[in-house]
Image 1 (tube, protein in one colour):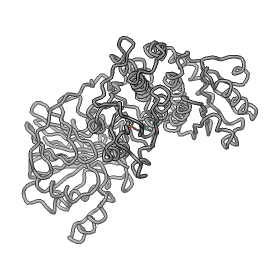
Image 2 (image 1 turned 90 degrees about the vertical axis):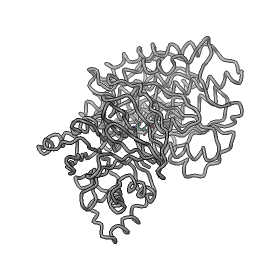
Image 3 (image 1 turned 90 degrees about the horizontal axis):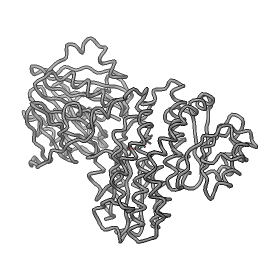
Length: 599
Ligand code: AGP
């Protein structure tokens, strides 16, 4: 989704802006632009398409200056074109702004501004900011911005420059902005990825805060102009973690990183056969858990429901964050809301969390990005420590989310003194080794991918705790290969989807050896009887499965509660190889954004 980078210092800002924009590319965008201040004049360049288009333009060479802002836009209001690309300007081109988020009352504001004579040239809501600031500007940019922000409903990560002032004003509400503190230079970005190469010292802006940034100092204020004391924090991620390291795509690298990422999630959290996680509030009174999330994180949440109900014996509901926030959910004081999010910035998940907080539920985050908005708003949290995930399709974050949910469920069980089969802890420690083992199916999966790369549809079927794995397998395939895919509980197939099955329909079964094995074999037979092509992911390729399956992907055996971690990996690889064979830009599939910071 949209990205912001700003620079102010002693060097030419243009290379910083271009490099920063490239670091934000993974978030997804369809136009880009920059604006640089030199000798009290603003110079700008905007392009539809990729950042490479900006770089190719000869005019970029003539743009230099010590202060600049830049933006990657993911279209919401108005198609992706140069006019709608940011930065946007006021009528006299004195002011430039870049904005992430949505101004909800922009139609009303536009009417007022147009009546007052402002000429608004783009279809975006964002341009309103430049005109409002122009309206209020009387020689003090900071004041004009704060007056503007008081009029605006909606969300913003905003950076503003004025040709008469050697500063950047940054402001945030509901869309992240981070100040990077360097040596005689300061940066501002919507994502730490754009700052890492220059500084690890950062200040996270909170909602309704403004930063006034010059090359060697900054101050943070609320919208009434009162100074705030904000702590400088340190980013733990390294630049090396953000590189492909010889892999063709980030997604493939991240799939292969899973032995390590899951190790990091469980590291130090199992000691002497006990789960050690620190939750900053009393869990004893919790009578009901609600998990909220979106996309892949929502699939992890569904697995979490099985784990929390079966291991921790606590009634658990799972809700799409986008539905939860508007359906006036019944939330009680003794409810625990768990928000799961890789990025920690997903707008719907954040809104659902706030809804729960408003109703005094306790809140817990399962988050990967340290310092992200959700991680700072929850009462307590379990960080994944999976390292940066750059590929738009979530892989390692998912297996770490499931690992964190296993730890939490076992911890809650332990807290209630319920008996625990120690074998699950033994298997949990073995998980990284088992992941290494399952990754060896990569070669075989490439062949399967070749056989099915031209399929128009796919079905993914699983049961019990592996039903959400089927959903996740289908989502991965859809996202990056653009093949239509559906996930279903295997038994549900005969209530409708069975009508789709013919010789052109590949059906992926997640079929571990467990209490439901014979049932899933029956489901396979139903598919085979209709000439469907079965791909079975299983740890027990017995003769019944061999009889019906076209392809068998053999995975290592593991405790059933942990099996979603192992079973999801071949599905990630299948989606990856099919997409790669179709020459799709796997890391940046069309229309998708890494972190969805608007509704
Ligand atoms: C995953 O492959 C997706 N790109 C997407 O569904 C994602 O999981 C969803 O947008 C939630 O993101 P979050 O985990 O950062 O909140």
